[in-house]
Every structure is written in C-alpha cells, then in structure tokens.
Length: 320
Ligand SMILES: [Zn+2]
Ligand SMILES: [Zn+2]
Image 1 (tube, rainbow, N blue to C red):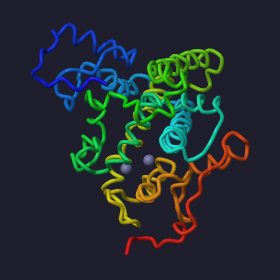
Image 2: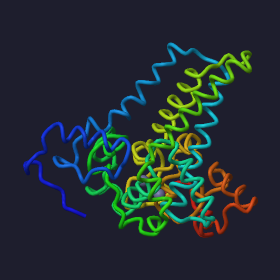
Image 3: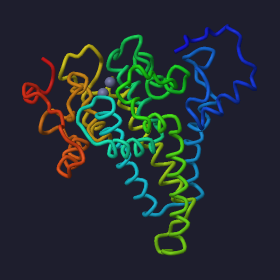
C-alpha cells in the first residue's frame, strides 16, 4: 500500500478532491488514499453520515405510529445482533464457526447497520485489540471522547481498510464485493421500508403508517440510535465501569452498556480474553448475543462456540 502523502505534497485541485469524495460514497475503493492530513475530518466524504442524523428531524413531519416504532426496535435488535454476534465475535475474533451462506447473510445484515463492510470493521477492530489505549489506537478515549466516539472514522486514516489484517476474510470474493459497495445494502433497506409503508397505508390504514414515516423511524432513527449505542463501546466502555481484570488497556465492565449492546458492555472481560463467544463471564452477566448464538447453534446454523476458560468463570467481581 502506498505511504501517506504528507500534507504539503502537491494537493489535488478542489474539484478533483470533491469528485473523489463523492465517488467514495458509492464505491469505497473508488480512489487511492486521500492526500492531506490523515487525521482530519474529510467533510465532503462524510456528508451522508451528517445527513443520516439530520434526517431524524423528519419525525417532526411524519408523526408517530406504534407500527413504525416497533419496526425501528426490531431493526435495531436484528442489526445489533449482526454487529455484535458476527462483525465482532465472528469476523473479528473467529469465536465460532459457521457456513459460507450464513456468514454472508449476517455480513449483509451487518452492512445494513451503515457501519461499513465486515472487512473494514474487523480490520479496525483487530487493530484496536493489538494497540488498545496506546498512541496507535485511533479510537481510544485517551484521545478525547468525540474522537473515540466518531471522529476517528470520519478521517482518511479511519476510512482505509488494512487488508493485511483480515487476509482470512479477504479470500472470500463475496465479502470483498460487499465491503466495496456496502452502501447498497442500507439504500435497499431504506427503499424497502418506504415501499412497505406506502403499501400498508392503503392496505391497512388502521396501522396509521405510511412510506415517509416508516422510512424515518425504521431506517433513520433506528440506524442513528444503533450507531451511537455501538460506538459507546469505544468511547464509554473504556471509561465508565469496573475493572475485574488488570488488562493493559482501560477497558471496563458496564451492565447498562451490556444491556443496550446485547453483551458488549462486558468489555473488560472481553479485552482480557477476546477469543470466547461469550463476553458475560459470570452467570449474572447478561449477554443477549451469546444467548442468540446458542439458539443459532441449536438450530445448526453456527457451531464450535469457543467457551470462557473455566478458571475465568469464577473470578471475583472486581480486580483485587
Ligand atoms: Zn476495547
Ligand atoms: Zn473485540
């Protein structure tokens, strides 16, 4: 991979930089590494991310229905499970095994979360575990709350995918294709929700929903909440909570975050032993993703869930 250009080396004309940023909205491999400061926000490229947030204001015009609300909740839950169970525990950590079709199905559902493709996600996450809370960790809260929460991936450095870190995943052409055109999945989800709402308005007017309403609640509100809850594991779970294990990083266990993220909040457990499919080590540490994976194992969809070593299951609540 070409080294970064330094900020003062022949900047491209502004129209070429603009075209390049817009091309990256649709095809993440459309342009070589950005020139300029790799740690500054690439504003033009991230306009869709800004738009995702602004679109939530649409609730003022489209109003509320319980159907739209529950659609948002179900899509939050399904996509959170895809992120924690598959993007994190499977693609990043290989904590269990599955078939190629199931791997792809959950890669697509994960991509519907608008958190890029599984290769990008896993590459950055593996980097996080290697360098957690050091200078090289791009989303350590030691660099400030907002940088750890979201600024890190709005930059050219955060946009790139280190394919060397995910060679085991990059050998699947369908995953590489999904990573390249990941935006297609959320666009299809948004269009599908609009079409469903428009149909329900005519077919079941008692539900009180319509196309714009289902689009705003089911896609925009659900996705923005899902996003901000997911990234609290980078920003808050390295700040708030207790430390059972004296890991080299600042990771914490936090019951509230574990509930909202379906088990990811047992983050100090996870940094201590990242290889297990289960992150709540003690019986009272609720880990909904692990329960979901157990169910999938019963149905024969996944197998070989890597266990928490016995010695770690009976540890004390706090580090001594
Ligand atoms: Zn961490
Ligand atoms: Zn991890």
